[in-house]
Length: 153
Ligand SMILES: [Cu+2]
Image (cartoon, rainbow, N blue to C red; front, top):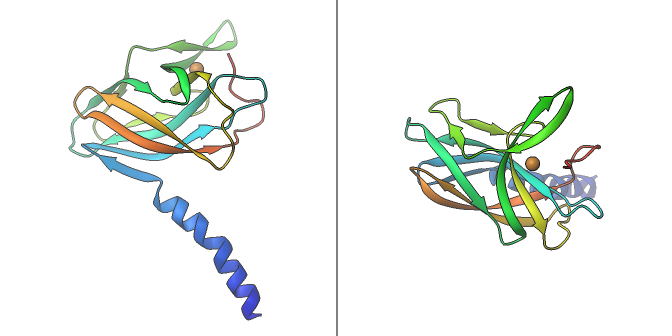
């Protein structure tokens, strides 16, 4: 019985640690629920998602992103054209004061193109975000398997 409890604690602790790391604050930016989709076999592109909020009550704008794991990083949105979901590059992502910006599958995302090696579920990948006011914010993003269907061009 004691052994079972110890095992349960051991299983619960890494999850709690991962939760605690989900909120990152730098400059006047708070990032939460950041994750990057693990590579699909033969697909050199992937995407990162997160919630971005400002902590000083003022709006900001995400201007660009970069990562050493990708050849090129773009800011994208999804839109429906003639009933077909497509991705399009956007010049910037607005981060309104209060509500913030939510980057999620099927919506705004950070697009990583020409990924240099397969990103594995469970690893972490560096990502740098450049904001108009807050400047450069660097974070390490946990890599997770996405939902079935994947994120493709
Ligand atoms: Cu995209």
